[in-house]
Amino acid sequence: MGRLIINAVLLLIVHEIYFVATATDQETCESDRLMEEQCRIHNYKTVKPLLDYFRQVRNELEDKEIKENKLNELNSDLMEKYQEIVRIHEKFVKEAALLDEYKNKVIKGENDLQLCKNRVDKLESEINLQQNVIVKIKGELAEKSTNLENCEIQYKTLNSSLFEKDENIKRFSENIQNITEHQKTIELQLEQSKTKLIKKYKDNQLCRAEIDTLNKTLLNTLIPSSCSPFGDSDVHTLNVSGIGFFDVLCDSQIAGPGWIVIQQRVGGNESFNRDWATYRKGFGSFDSDFFLGLEKIHRITSLQRHELYIHLVALNGSTYNARYDDFKISDEDSGYKLSLGKFSGTIIEDAMRYHENIKFTTFDRDNDTDDGNCAIDYESGWWYRRCYNCNLNAPFGPDLNWYKRNPLKNAKVLIRPKKAMKN
Image (cartoon, rainbow, N blue to C red; front, side, top):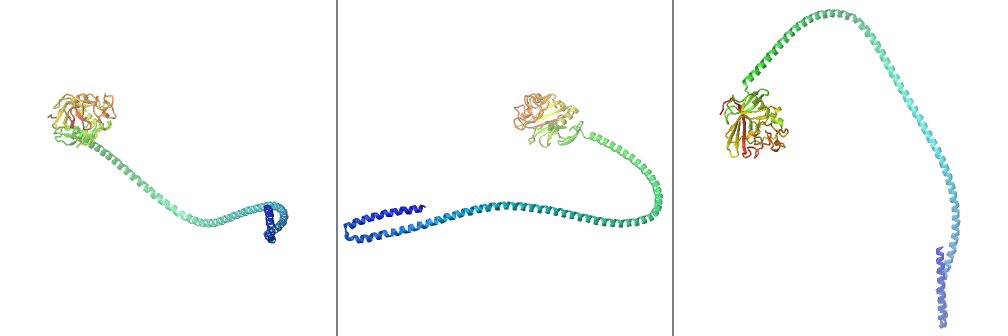
């Protein structure tokens, strides 16, 4: 339709152009009548193509109209066919639904048939199994029948030999009776031997007890409780009541014979910052720094009166000593309290007197009278008060001193019974 409108517009435009051209040609022909024939020929040539075009357009329009009519007829037929197809489709859908319903019924029937077939197979399998069991039972029954026949034969054989065995049993019974009488005789002899053996064992035990008693008596007689019998400077074993045997370092060079070294500071690496249990037991090495042990010192000094000798070496190498004539420490329940006796020596100050009647203190047992714990402050156990005038267990340095103005290089603490030879 749009193309038809465009063609009509073009036709009008050509018509106008034709009239304009005709008017122009007429003016020209009026001015020059001689050219009239030429003008007509020219106009005809000019307009003829347009007329041919118009004829073509008209023919096309007529053809188009005819085609549109045919197209409308085809559309009408197509619509009728479409409606018929819709009716056919609806019918097809209904038939497909019926077909699906029939198909589901067929599938259900097949499933039921398969279930029946499975049940039949299962029943056949069970029947075969029962038949196999029956065959097996028949075989076992036949075997047991054979065994029963064999047992009857064996029974007859055994029954025939039973009489012979009864005779043998009688003979064996007579032999057993004889053996029993002989066994009783042997048991009586064995009991007598056992009694003798027990008596000998008890006698042996008594002998061993007497030997042990003699050995202990001999050890107590031979092993002393002090270094007084020894005239050297070496390690010896002592036997002290209440604690038994233990080694000590004896010294006969510093202050004469018979001294026990209970503490030694000679420049070793031994730490004296120990707990109560370690100070009670003792620690260190006799060839370096050591502390003999509070319990050993208490046991030794409780046997008899002991004197105390303290050997001091100043930083400049000068040597001094301090002596006390009645040294002892109390038991653990009393805190190993210190007692000294009368002071003498080559050093002027009686620095240990400040610590007399004072309990021993370690970092885990605070017995001093200070607000804090002196053992923690000075990294060593000692008979601290508030805190000390001398500390022979302090780490090497300014705290190891006799009175704080006398720092020490080395120190040794020795004891011996008061009745021993003096030097």
